[in-house]
Length: 188
Image (cartoon, rainbow, N blue to C red):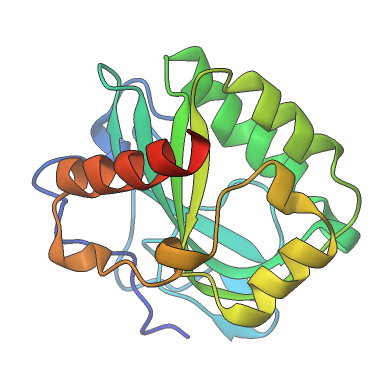
């Protein structure tokens, strides 16, 4: 797992550590010191800790004028034991929303499992974005099945075209335009 790095091709366009509006502003990374783990497995030091014991993220891009953020995720999303959605919402998402972000693209191909609790924080997040949306890209099928079982699909957009987006081939703004178009068709 230590070989799974956050996507770095857009680093010349955006760095959360250099963004004064980011929750990770001034964060320093040591490429040689592996101190973060998912259970007993070390992960790459570029992943950002936000309070969860098993889930890490990387804000790959934020555009405050257009109001969107792209966040890559890694690990186990565990609301049952650690209330990861509460941690994510309070420590990251709310700070971004205060800066005008209301459209979120979460990339989940490195989310290994999802363990649900209740849906209250998802509902709260959904209400907070008002005219925006929350898109979940490339999550594993068993994770998507769990989202559906827990009826989180009322608040989050996933499945269909969003399960097979070749996002690495796009820049952040073309990716946003693609997802905005897909969700525009869905929501109309």
